[in-house]
Image (cartoon, rainbow, N blue to C red; front, top):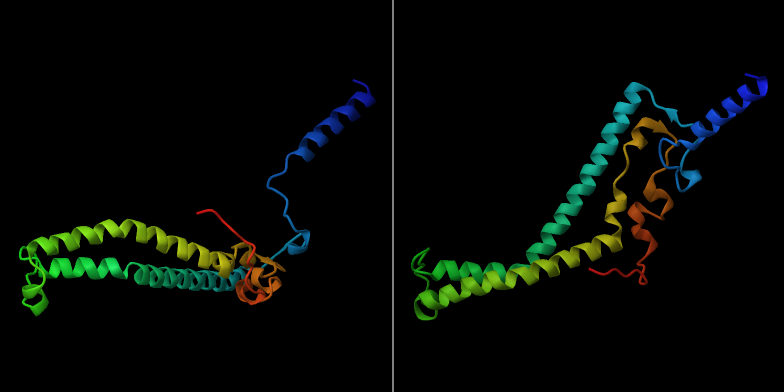
Length: 179
């Protein structure tokens, strides 16, 4: 083999290796320092706890918001089913005045059935309300990646967006989504 063939062989291997990228490149090169500097073991552990606690707090806020919205939207269903079960003679058979004078077994059964029928559309309304509010408040952007704990110099997402989770930026009225 000649020296030219050896150089061509090496160049061919180099070009094949350069085409293999282990992961997608970042969309914004300002977000990352090249090369990233890893943290020490104890510093990484401390930052891992900070990122973990922040993500847990964001998760609890999302869960609380979800619970409040579903409770408010499903309140009519809860009330109707509760009164239906409370006044039915085969279930609780309350001695309350409205159970004796207004609701008999047939009307109690009708309330139970009505409550379960109106539950499905109200669940959809509650989910749409939660998703639109979470999107407007950018709640899912508050979750921080684990790479923040491992490497130095990774910027916080909410810092560049004008406040905690971008809520201070204002409402974007032009964002629309099909649900």
